[in-house]
Amino acid sequence: MLPFPSAEKESHPFSTGIQAGLSIAIGYLPIAFTYGLLAKSSGLSLVETVGMSVIVFAGASQYIALSMIGAGTGAFEIIITAFIMNIRHLLMSASLNERMKDDAKWIKAIYGFLITDETFSVAATRTEKKLTSAFMLGLGLIAYGSWVVNSGVGYLIGAGLPATIQNGMAVALYAMFIGLLIPSAKKSRKVIALAGTAALLNSLFSLYEPLAGGWGIILSTLISSVGIEFFVKEEKVHGK
Amino acid sequence: MENNLLWMIAGMGVVTYLPRVLPLVLINTNRIPPRLQRILSNVPFAILGALIFPGILHINGDSMWFGLLGACVAGLTAYLNWNIILVVLSSVAALSICSFFMG
Image (cartoon, rainbow over all chains, first blue to last red; front, side, top):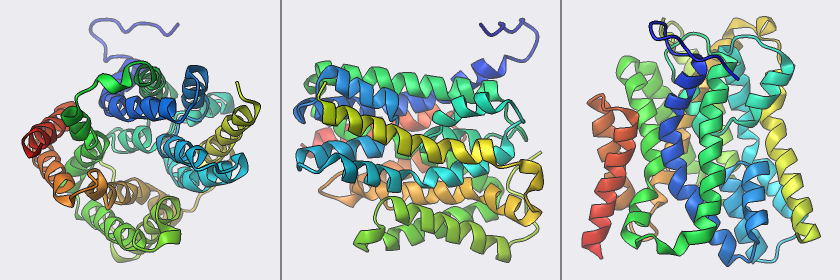
């Protein structure tokens, strides 16, 4: 067990991580819930549905797997698609590596599993200069717990939720991304340029079928991150 | 469990895990040139932009105004320094109400 923080001291990084991950846990609720519901209608068993969330832990890939299973696509094509969609995590993992305090490789191998678009975004927009493994574990585990549990809940009681709330909940994760971006954008024009360029490029790429999804995000992120670096050299994006 | 599905889930597990973990365990941070370090520190903000657009415009199959409204509510509440959980909940609430009245 991790030691509990004493009353006067700053809270333990693990609990800080859990607090930072609460917004992700809430954001995952409707997505995981809907995934569970769809998995049931695709003919998966409860064990397969929750098992996929436990082992894969990648929302978009799991959704696409369901629709490909429904279309009768083979396992190999589904695995290749999941791979292409998740290559972007190479960029996130490499970027996060810069911010993390050094630690044993096996610990990195554990919290590495917990990297998603959302846990990465929350971690990367923190104002601390360096992040600890305990923080990442707290952040990742609350998100992972929400994902796994709500997949099962969605499978079991999915159809019961009112449609209007289901419609509204579709915006949850995007709202979180915006909520993470704005505070940094207020402080730095470079952040606005980075996000704006990537958003514009990805919108253009999405019109071209082969780049829609995984590759478009990777390309637009790379072009924006590299390109802006040559225009704006002096400004640092992380405070402190 | 159906055998084929079991292998598919295991395979998906491997190909989603490797990109997450390889850079963390293989890259030695101290050996990265400063310019590459700055580029890597740009990545989070670029990725956020690419994750939000155009995805948010497609959350409702019928109209992209639905997503734009959600973006405005989230943008405004975040600009006013609301807690991130309130940012998420207020834009979900706004769109739920909107969806209720649109039928």
